[in-house]
Length: 279
Image (cartoon, rainbow, N blue to C red; front, side):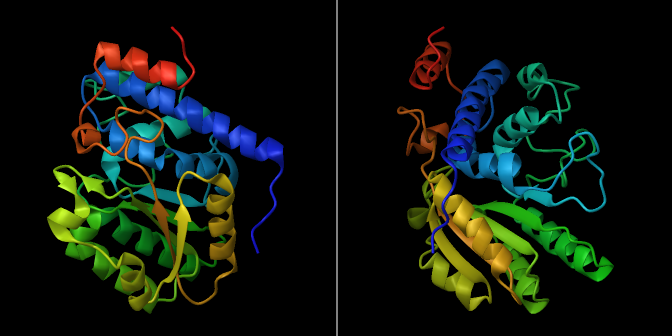
């Protein structure tokens, strides 16, 4: 049965996601590079994770019993940095250093530079493999930690992803939750034109995962999926989160061009206006 959530919680998550989207535009514009499209599609799920779901301590990012989040689609770093800034892992003003020489905020997340980043990713398909290892480690040590990993749909065209899925199921890692950001678009166009994934949910099930399908921009559905994953025993859960590339910014939505294209000066103003910022 769908959960019933306080209106205050849903409003808080919506506002957090809105501010994250604003910061994604500001960051990529300031850098003159980056990946706004896939960051915007992932924003709502990350907001639900960082501001509700994850057991983490920003003041103690190395807390042994923390939950882990691995951004396997590491190019969506702006979304992760925006969430981490909102949660207190770094000062919001640091966001505008994205991709600068010497910055802690690299174009693909770097665990060596920024406390709270669990794994250096960007070489696609490696993040989900590391998440499997983290989940197995937590179980062997008897720790309560849960591990969440977000993968991209273009990333699913890599064989290592499926090797990791086999391992997660083989070891019955019910403390592991995968999130497929299914926006349907990669660098050069539609995933289905470049290398078809469908029926992706049936494939995940065939690999031994409990599989859920949700609207990635609907907070009750997101929270329900996390709750069901916690109740699932004996196998990992994959949440197929159907999303919109560039979500929230009309001229970016569904456009492959904005996979790796930052907003121009005029587009920044227009995009922020759509997100409620007039100046």
